[in-house]
Length: 230
Image (cartoon, rainbow, N blue to C red; front, side):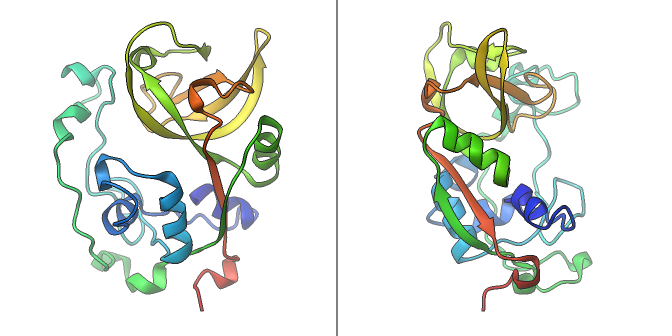
């Protein structure tokens, strides 16, 4: 959503949507901080709108994230983070924040006035259609099956070798390419820059590998001069 506003405004608007506003206030999206449905999140953006908000301690936007960055699976997953972050497993049972429909006092904007809505939400199917969407409109959201060996990914095109299925995981596809003759999607993960290839990974494309091409969701924001619904 944040990418789409920037792209549709030709780079003139840098509105960072608040993750906390979404997980705490969209009651039909799923289980708050513990997971949910990507398509419902996009529909919430279209129907209810979202306010701005940056990362923890950023003082950016209406509702910045209230939890500090934590280590996902490496190295802090075992409790020995070298980056000074606690392992995310320490926050596994933290309650989702209460839905507060108010901006930080320092922001100086009324909550409802800060909301930005989606104009439309849609799904994309097929490798070529996904590529066309990426080229024309920007990154898309996808979901794929995570297996235990994925946590140890470092570089190259990921391919399952061993380990149990762990969970479904939502990520952002930002491009495509070919590496050593293997077609792949370039994907941004949400596990910080010290995981994987500086926070990114590649995975086979065109084969619906690990279900990554099964659910592709994107949307268009309302125009910059009409960000509020009337």
